Length: 221
Ligand code: C5J
Image (spheres, rainbow, N blue to C red):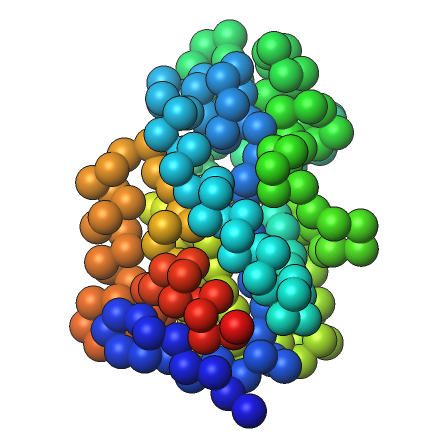
């Protein structure tokens, strides 16, 4: 039986048995001082607002039996999977792989690469390590979702206009129905967050629909 979630541009009917929640990059490197986000000149405190609703949504989805998957952006310790263009866009002395207060910036296995304590995955939940912005690029996410019979994807996390957006667009192209709870997403740029959400739901929901944590929780409750 489907559940209907109030959303923009229109309510969305989700099949709970074919739904998964995908939480994008809620890592110390993006949300805490001293990591990748700050190394790019951002005020990381701006991402805090989405942590509480994101945590509530994760708990509700777990209670409803909906799988919760997590992603982490980061690179191999040898940096073989960092392309030169990405590296060139970093500030000198604060490049991917350089030492920082939370270990080497954006490198797998380092403290900064880990997910923040408040939203830590439960044992057994899937964690996808991705080298790019999108969660499907160079990962086995699509295979895992299709093997589990998932067709409806709730996508949240950080940042709205970068890794969340890229993933939502990729998911839409792959045939998933995508729902984005906007209050569970965060950006270093308030205007990008707003416009990023508006871009998803515009034009009749050109590549998804936008909702809130509470609307999803109510529908699944
Ligand atoms: C960025 C991300 N912003 N997780 N990564 O570089 O959005």
